[in-house]
Length: 190
View 1 (cartoon, rainbow, N blue to C red):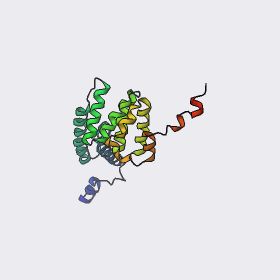
View 2: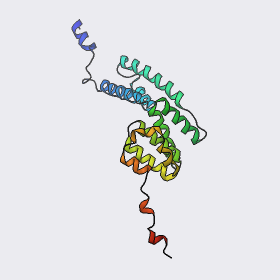
View 3: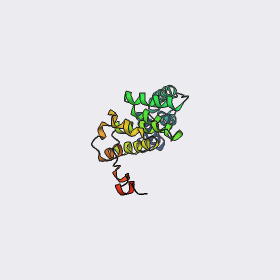
View 4: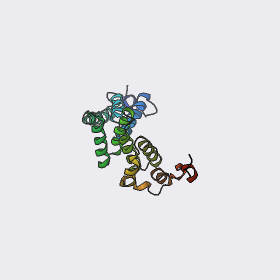
């Protein structure tokens, strides 16, 4: 066997030639995307598939990202004694601008405690800050349904300033109650 034959045998394969390498690249890219979206548990699963795979270079990079995911997951596993504690935590995340983590906490709270009006109110504020206006209106509608006082709180809440000119928001906060009032003849009818 000459040097040219040895080179061809040791020549790195192209992504399209080795399906294991192509799968590793796909898992690596999916892991990066999940990591950028702060979905560390999902990213960890992808990176674990890449570590020890066909490509040592890709495996080394995945190991670094896997370590980062493990650090984030150990930091994030906060236990809350009450829904109020988790709500306060979600609000603090929202105030720091970590909207994705705040959303995760609000969604977890809504799934566990859909009867808590303040959780829906917080989700409405977060959706408004993120520019998700239809979702904000939907969440605020539920918060008001559960506790009518939220209607008055939202009127003066600066988190909803982006919705101030939206007619749906105005109708929600200032409903037309004239249709609900009895006419003069109905008032005095015995």
